[in-house]
Amino acid sequence: MADQINNLQADLCKTIAHPTRIQILELLRGGERCVCEIFPALEIDQPNASRHLSVLKKEGVVSSRKEGLKVIYRVNDQRIYQVLDLVTAILKEHWDSRNKALA
Amino acid sequence: MADQINNLQADLCKTIAHPTRIQILELLRGGERCVCEIFPALEIDQPNASRHLSVLKKEGVVSSRKEGLKVIYRVNDQRIYQVLDLVTAILKEHWDSRNKALA
DNA sequence: CAACTATATTCTTATTTGCATATATAGTAA
DNA sequence: TTACTATATATGCAAATAAGAATATAGTTG
Image (tube, rainbow over all chains, first blue to last red; front, side, top):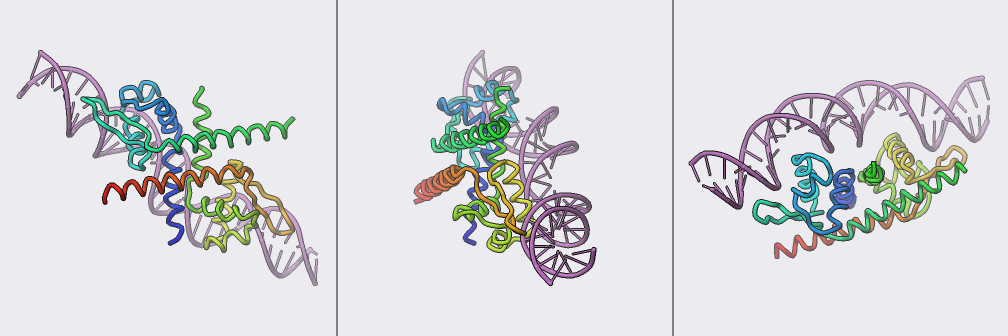
């Protein structure tokens, strides 16, 4: 099928289509972080953070390396932030034009 | 909560995180289309197309207008295509680097 | 008004997803 | 080895999502 690419696109979108995973990515905007920093910053429990990180890793959005006991995650492709920023801009536009319609 | 924005971002990502909806958006890249053109082009049945269009409309990704019996859909913010193109580019990069690793 | 066409909605069922809890693994240190 | 710390995985359950079939609505035409 020629639309196989659409499945892959959808999978990547689905991977980032979760508030917690977006929060993780926003945290990683500041550079790599170990799990022990991530889950307290997001105020979620450790297994939950671990599962979301594994979702991101499975799709190739992040990678990890070990440093002693710690596992440190980083974003693979910085363009993921262009995606998030575009999404934010689209939302803002939508919000603004909706409010303009009400005014 | 400050992370309310993350919910909105996730909702928009979730809205486009479906192969059929991506196909609809790709079709609308060529300009507005009525439902009667969309569902045969995608080889899905009409209620299915209608439901996916309503998902896109509810999130504000597309709008519609009536013209006689027909309902014609259009994309609200062309930047959604920048998102899709970035996603494609990221996928391609991921694919390439994975194959390079195997070589 | 009745018949027809284009689109939308409802219902049911199957699948997927997310969370909480508990448990398991890996590395470190005594 | 034992105890401890950091991270990962398994289980069970509730909620969300998706597709097909059937039905409903809105607009058009005679």
